Image 1: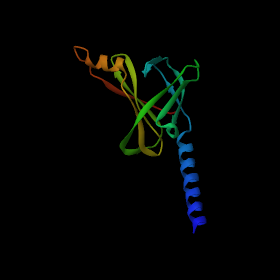
Image 2: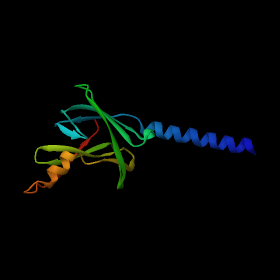
Image 3: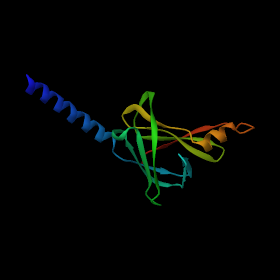
Image 4: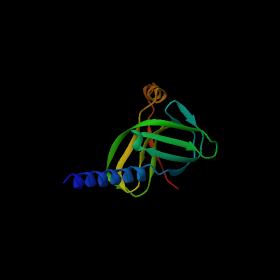
Length: 139
């Protein structure tokens, strides 16, 4: 009986770690504009984005071209549809972009970025600017 219980827990932990490992796979994006993420401003370029869900909702974003990168905390979100390919959404205020959400392929689950101080200040400006959501799909 004890052997069966241990075998079951072992199998469950193996399946869970395989699932988390698959979610930690990097996704590549070509982002055609400079953007804000956390306290950083990153240039346009090729990016490798790795959702490190096994590390507690951390997302790593690294510029392949310029070798700059950041790690930020994110919040889990759900969509009413499953995404066919990875998508990175940006909130645009005029010509200033802020990373908003990342959706993973084959899932309705995604990650939402916390608004930075710069984004909150820009959103409060008078007269108010109409924000626009811009999506970039994985390459």
